[in-house]
Length: 236
Image 1 (tube, helix red, strand yellow):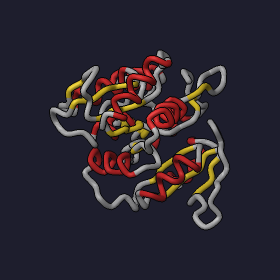
Image 2 (cartoon, one colour):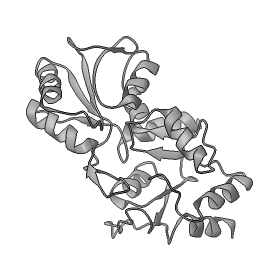
Image 3 (cartoon, helix red, strand yellow):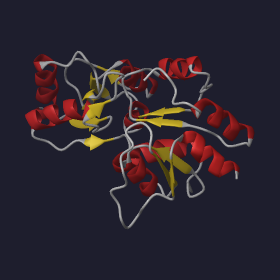
Image 4 (cartoon, helix red, strand yellow):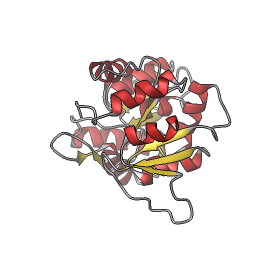
């Protein structure tokens, strides 16, 4: 999406003026960090150093020098290189999968073959769909499912709501206890579950996907119509 939800830019400004750090924790692994920061800046939202992606969370699972086959977009290549791992076409120790619109049978076969030869499989996320201005399209999770099925393995998943993303957020914030942190999201099955997994508070907004809470035992701490409504709650 290229246009901010009405009121969201002012809401972020007001939260920052009060001294709150605002971070953008996304399962989007395709775009580079610089591209995501520039996109937010074009909306009037400075975000340098405040973007956390599922590609970065996946890269946290790598060791320097590890041989990695990438089936993903530029953001995954960037994260793997920043982790000091080696991007290869064959003899891979790990296969990392993320959304990329060039995915085809040859790509699936190459990844599945590497896994059958002993490489582990990491998915940046398992989101079945990817939002676009014209509606949802198949996401990184759909690509991951195809490769995992072809290789007959269960992948390790890095993005929300899984543990690697929580570990990466703690790393960026230099905080282990996230009980004072608010996670604001529109998808309970991803954002809500992530908040609960890291012991953060969860605010469900009804914009975007606007998915209702699926948890009766762990409902959102707050339901807000949008980000501006959440900011008003915090300001009060």
